[in-house]
Length: 213
Image 1 (tube, rainbow, N blue to C red):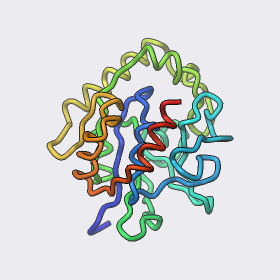
Image 2: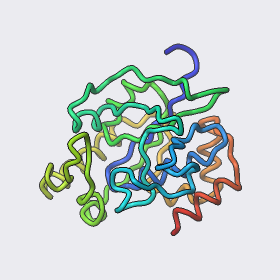
Image 3: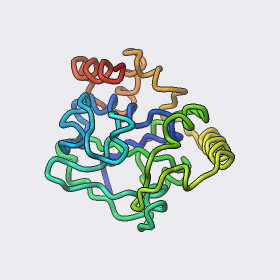
Image 4: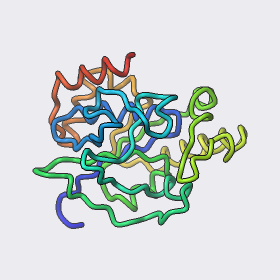
């Protein structure tokens, strides 16, 4: 794709609240939200009847209201036995809108594939992982994370991903330690300014209040 690249990638370890970060960023006016009814028609509405919705109402998949979707790539695709690097369609990005993609893949790998702009989350929380993500189902097979990895593999995976992020951060990435930094409106506005996002205080507060529930 030449010219304007609409993709903003959230690189976050599993259990680092990547979906919550995505919902907060989607409060901006020029983000194309995955507005399928089961995701919540707006980013401040809970998901329902999607994978892991019973464990977290902050999750969302990559579907839109017309039931079109963005395919899984990289780490998601591997767990589903699907092609890792399909050609992505950006036809949902009208009038300069941006599209969010959350990935747990290595930063250099996702940078090479998406060629977009990155929010990098330097969070590594094995304890929260075991309390939450350990019970999630993933991929086409919908296997439990606990069926795919041992506790030791989880700890190693989270640490290695964090090391990869730290090694591959570039000057134009927006780097945070945790989502808490984005709950500071001034910090969130810095993200908006850096990525040409249109801040909407009303929508921002709606998502922030939802995430506090």
